Amino acid sequence: MKKKLLSVLLSAAMISGIIAGCGNNATTPADTSTAQTDAAADDTQTPEPAADAAADDTSADAAADDTADAPAADEGKVLNIYCWNEEFKTRITDHYPDYTEVDATHGTIGDVSVVWNITPNDDNAYQNNLDATLLKQADAAADDKIDLFLIEADYALKYVDTDYTMPVADLGITDADLSKQYQYTKDVVTDSNGVLKGLSWQGCPGVMFYSRDVAKEVFGTDDPAEIQNYVKDWDTFNETAATLKDAGYSIMSSVNDSYRVYSNNVSSKWVTDGVINIDDNIMKWVDDSKELVDAGATGTHDLWSDDWSKGFYPEGKVFAYFGPAWLAADTEGSIGYNGGWGATEGPQGFFWGGTWICAATGTDNAGLIKDIMLKMTTDDDIMTDIVVKDDDFVNNSTVMDALASGEKKVQREGETEEHEYTSQILGGQNPLQMYINGVASLDLSNLSSYDQGCNEEFQHAMKNYFEGNATKEEALDLFYKSVVEKYPELTY
Image (tube, rainbow, N blue to C red):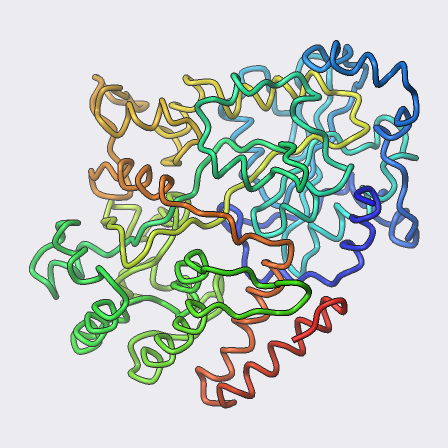
């Protein structure tokens, strides 16, 4: 049944208004993927994954345990990587020691040609392209097969609960290799049978970024511990919003900024026994957000829209954003560019996004993928380099603990001596212990394969209510109908 699941899931319409990955940079789809996508678009049959070919071969089963930690020698001369933006390509280019860039969509690792198939998330284009190509995986020529692809938390189960993703153990990666990784990053990509199907180089616990200049102007201090007192819970947060409004600032750019904080702290799943369920904490977001919008303390902008992004610049008059390390913009002229953000915990702990590396069943580059996964997600030196150069939070507890405590010193390019780590966008603050505390509190027991669709449709429907174009009941009815249209197997 599991190998048929992807065919069912791929037929559901998926909308990706929220980019839950790390950053929102979009690029033009790579020409290398176009022919494959077009060829697969009209084929609705689910192919048998290559791994299933030996399913009934008892000799293969008998040998499985002996070869699990020693993948067959690679034969592939092309490594096809599918992703939605430049982030992973940048990480590979900057930190994977054996990679050489050829052009925007090509590189080499030894004698293997690397082809980047980059399709933006807009209108679900990335997943649509990935889905269509995976459906042709078993019949594709060796050089056209997907070898490695990236996924996000919101739709991870859609892929890991199928045979299109290889268990990392089949690549020869052991539990000991992954002992320093945070457990939640493994939970996201563990299938319903308890099999780990992907790895991530980053952790994405969230904090509240706030403008230091606004904090000093309105509250007389920009000290993180003092600012936390103004946002320690949602009731206090809303009271502080009124103070900021009187001073000419929005507490956040949009109600959608806080949505993921509430949705990460639910006590139930979106779907239970086929019935759509709205958790009490999601409804609290609705009530708190309506109060803020009616008071003029925040907007209703869609994430990643131009209006939403204005708050990353001083003239945007926005006090705070909620997000992980990757969120705070540092483009020239922005608040972060000059180290103008501070960070504090905010009302509740949460996480947002993350990118996971999956090996596609049928790859002829298993050994190379193993090396990429191990170097990019477990190597202490590479992990440290990512933190220092990219201001990222990495999936390595040993490295993060050492950097958070100041035990491990760093030296950035152009600096003459080593020093304790600080974040450049946070004006010299070291937020790592805050992130570490957030990772420890994460509970992913309520994740489901319906999360992406339900979260997006709920925010879309509630915008009508916040803007006065519908009653709460009308907005809820719109949400239910939209989800059932997307997932006909559900009821409410």
